[in-house]
Length: 76
Image (cartoon, rainbow, N blue to C red; front, side, top):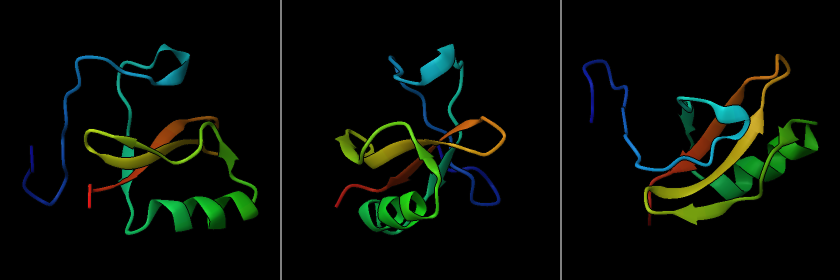
């Protein structure tokens, strides 16, 4: 669902979010693989490697505060 202001809301039957999270905030990026490489080099804690899902290419990472977020790009 595209919301006013540009936010996107998506629903999934199953989730692979760690720590039994009920929701999973995500960040849309242009290139998941390049973003993963740059962020990993800067010391961002990666939870999984880039992979393909029905909604696009993605990976999970942890913020310095311990929050789990998803980076993703639309399917090509």
